[in-house]
Image (cartoon, rainbow, N blue to C red):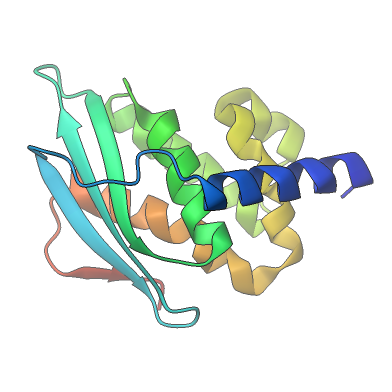
Length: 152
């Protein structure tokens, strides 16, 4: 990763970790799920409120996680607003492939926008689960799966 991208990655992670967006419980969530990463200790709850057309009106999260998990959840909740479940699923797939190293960052940026900064996670394989936990939890909430989502 070049130094400019690495610096942007670090700045965005720290900004969203220090001041996470949408870090709150929703008043009337339609869906919710709990996620846990036993490797890192991240625990996250994701709640989603859908509009009448099934689009994400609002997404919020609570819990405790490392900087990568918190930043990922913060940016994720911003990025899914107004999206359908199919669009959220597409973002999930591209994000997962990006951080796992299976997707070209330049190509992923066309779909993910600012979320493409998480390409830096691929340099730290143990952190992939931290970055993807919020996404797996969101997906479980939208699919109304019972039980806790785990990265193991």
